[in-house]
Image (cartoon, rainbow, N blue to C red; front, side, top):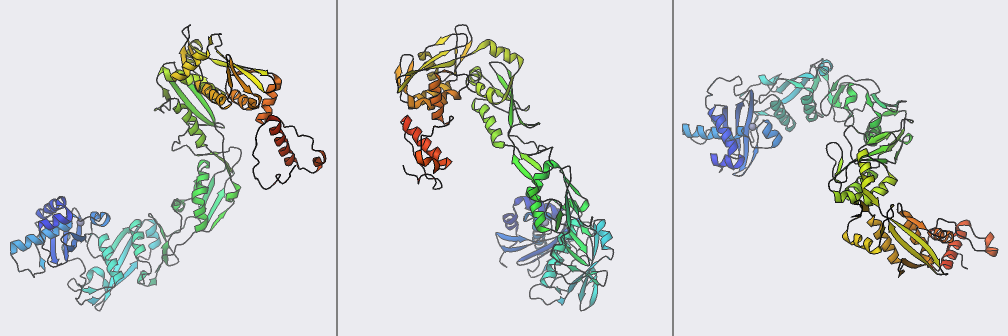
Length: 620
Ligand SMILES: [Zn+2]
């Protein structure tokens, strides 16, 4: 794109005005040491702080350019940086002041003050079409490499071999264009970045820098330890032997079989130097710590280790262990819930705890230090998981009744009297049955003084062969009675409480009563003044509904209760006399016959479903 004209507008378009502004600052501070524009390449040297950057742009069009700068912004964020823009501005300014003919390749401005890094410390590469002297790079590692690696600092020596001989890289002639292989070109680039712009002869690197460079040197032929011993750089990982021991305490110790190896080059992906070879260290992620010593895996972390790290470890390295995954038992534990309520009828605070054995956790919450797994103290290989679904469900029961939270102290709050009364009417009796529920003393007193539960009482009176009557009465423990119409009004109001004449609140589990009414509706009863008349075939269904509720009292003759029990399936069905089939039928087939008989006696319908092809093949 030789028609691209370098100017402020172009740079603003490529890099933004902010970069142009910063670039002007660099230019004004005489930070640009050198600039050169030969389309499409803009090149130069810029100094900022203690660093000198080889900056520049490969300008493809007025809106598209690659940044060549060696600074962090450019390399890591791919941005067109102020350095490269400054080089461009420098070129434009130099051209303007000198009014030079356009073919002059290089424009120079004298720096305002002397700088420690003068221009011209970079090896000149032959441009495209230009002939250059062939040059080959050589890397010389220090003979004491292992000791150097132990200190995490290593000095690399770089030499270049060209028709003029072999010499330290920075002593090669500066004005000679050199022709290098693609690999050497990339390598030179990398070295100059590490050396803040200059072509180095010696380079002191830390472990991280060294491993990054090594990954670019895989298969590189010209590497020696000292002047003569050849060194291989391979990308193939070395896998150390690993020993994993399950201790009697249940903890697992992982260590390198041969102890800590020497020649390790640390960093995010460690390498190792052994047997004249530099190669990556094949340790799965997270186990790099092994290089500094054994790894102790505490019991709370063992299941996670076995699930996540162990399979990788076992697959990628040669591992010896005194256990296998099959030795471990992991099953889910059954939580118990403990609810403590405090406050009053206008406002309630709840503390809900979940207990697994002796361990208490806040339901639905895992603190960072709180293990998901619960080690069995009696067995080093046994673990149980928390049942998060059950924990969530427990919390859900509070939330559904209007509790909010948890607050900073882990407490849940119910903030108005209406909700508190509804909670005590509907959910509290069930929670009391299923959980360990305690009330703070003041709240306990207050509920005893102010709350009265309306508990339905049911009376079953058989009425002939086919029918029975169900009478329902609603009254409080103190004997205050509610008419069916009162109850209906309460249901319609959506509330579960009402004021009594004595000033107390009467609580009714309206949810349960609604459920009962639906069940009755399904039974299609006849209505009578005290209740309902139902078919005997409905006894089991109804009985099950009534028994489910806390505190509901059912008065019924024994025969009715027994029949209901049979219908529910709690009571063993009677097998009819089978005659000669008695010896032929298998137990499960007899059970089937008993069931069919039961359906017939009760006038029910039944569906025989296909299951494994057993039993149906008997035809009576
Ligand atoms: Zn830059």
